[in-house]
Amino acid sequence: MEVRETPIEGLLIIEPKIWRDNRGFFLESYQAERYASAGLPERFVQDNHSCSVRGVLRGLHGQFPRQQGKLVRVIEGEIWDVAVDLRPGSPTYGQHFGLVLSAENFLQFYIPPGFAHGFCVLSERAQLEYKCTDYYCPEDEFVLRWDDPALAIPWPVKDPILSGRDLAGVPLADLEKVLRSRGWSG
Image 1 (cartoon, one colour):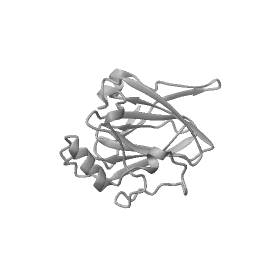
Image 2 (cartoon, rainbow, N blue to C red):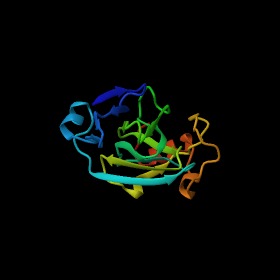
Image 3 (cartoon, rainbow, N blue to C red):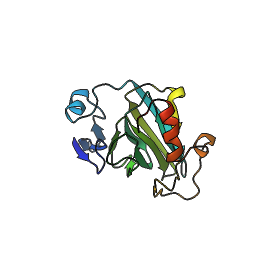
Image 4 (cartoon, rainbow, N blue to C red):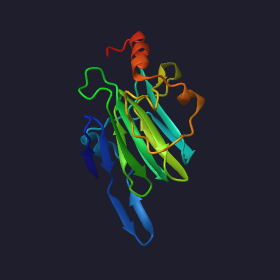
């Protein structure tokens, strides 16, 4: 497996080793000791599976104070995955990083706690699975507005399909007020 750093500290791209032959392929999508030695958490507590159609944009989601780290991979189709740094005091606070994850490239994206996460679907349909470092906690959830000009995220879809929850996301400036009320020190 190869682990690549991104311009934002803590965000990692993982390229697993793939064994291919005339039958197909095999890969280890997760192996605790190997991933821990690469700097990922030793403990994931929840696995999620999402399926969406072309043009769907989900995000930007996060939790505070009970934050989640995520290890994301696509098992069908293709998405553009993005993370926004919301860690107080981080030199890249408010900056984002995005990449294409697909069933063909097998890349995984590790997003540590302290980030908002979202993705949009580029293929007819996409399924992704992601491991989380903490449990889903609805009372801690927040939605950062996907098209906030302060973030300047170049989403590769026009007129995305959004849930009501994602349509109601708040801009970064308003989110900071909400998070401070929960004890965030940003």
